[in-house]
Image 1 (spheres, one colour):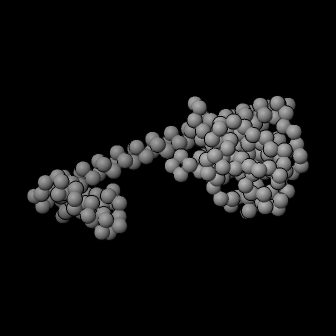
Image 2 (cartoon, rainbow, N blue to C red; image 1 turned 60 degrees about the vertical axis):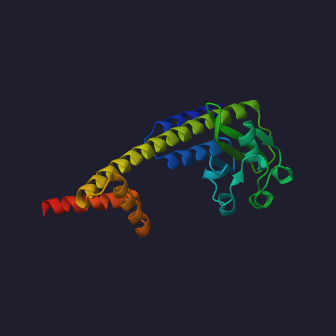
Length: 229
């Protein structure tokens, strides 16, 4: 039990460290695999738009496993776990009707699997998978340890999502400000209205395959250089 507590403590320290998102997830699966004596541990994240689970972190060196195709919500073991928001224990994935990648399991010597949902305030964000090479019974203490780790991983994922949303909002606001400024310059330069100024920026953006932000920045730069000259 001491090993499990040490693992949870290490992961807690990782969460508050200054390491990057992907590094934290990778180290989490490394620690989990080590303490649970697993030959493959992976974290799959849910793409909400596509409704699929994709491997985001694993300590596995198996190219076949790491390149597994995404799993649709509700399909396979991980998909079922994500949809029903309940853990599943599979004694032998090679003989289980839900498991989709039996060829990989045979090749990599995978046997027992425990799969747990990663949840934040009742919302599914991913799945934690832990494989063993021999038949194994996962006892209550094992499930408690893995549930704690799954909860920690879910917090990391949610915090990263919130950060990305915040950065996106900030970027959108910055872009809007630049477009507004560029419109003002075009209106002054060509004596046109706001709608026409926006249309010109939009048209140039499409013709040159550049973002509206890039076009706006070019307009602002040209205006500022003209003023200096």
